[in-house]
Length: 353
Image 1 (cartoon, rainbow, N blue to C red):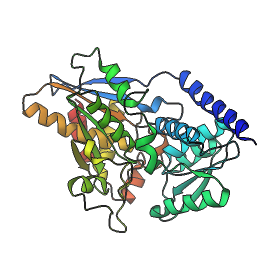
Image 2: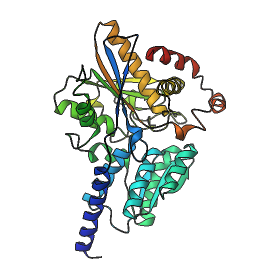
Image 3: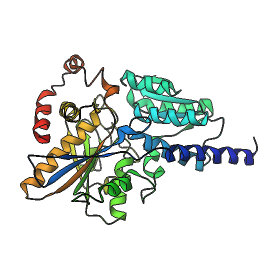
Image 4: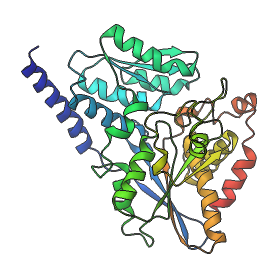
């Protein structure tokens, strides 16, 4: 293939991805009034309505566009990613759109429905026993296939235009514009790569909003420890959260602590309890990382109320719960893993009224 032919292929690939976006509506912003906290409103940015069912759809689109515009991907390129599931599901979707082979390097603990979703979109699975090895294995597979490792953990924070090009922060503020308290006091999100928190935090500062950014993080994650002490960059061996999609054993290159105002560490059992309680309120299942966000929101709202402050808090509904039917929604599975979620669920039911 000549350089000109490769350029035409790349232009067509970008057109396909942009056309797919143009056919999609924005994700919903769900309002939840809190009877126990008059004057404070909670909003959920529902990212489960993307074509691949999660917040990671935005990231996958950005990563593919970034790689295409850097000429890292061509018509014969095998695309590799290290992912616990949702990012790989979304990337498999875009790879199939472009007719490219896609291999996901995933930890052996990844929920089976996520693996099924990757395969549904034409992706291949390469499973590893040690989650810390996903990086090296991904690099090796890229070298062996002559492919490209998308590397979400490095490129997430730079692949998205944080100044406002259909990113999640711009969408949140546009959808909040006609609410009584249009500028949120807090936006709460989790961190897997750190790309979402980097995008939101930079956008807030660029647009000069008074909003503060809180990152909710599993207890067994390095991010909140690094935020408190920059010298901490790696968890002890064997320490690992059970909340898929957020929390990491090492500080990823895309995690930018300087744009974060506060971090709240959440126990895994409390995340699952919050997830189950919110699902009851909404009448549909949500994922575990959404529960982590809700626990942090509960704390922030209580502090606002104690200080006599009214306002709004926005958080992310990261993905639906159907992929976790055999784990977080299976009481026997939770019992086997020692996750006592019921107390946390009761606390969040009271919070949500």
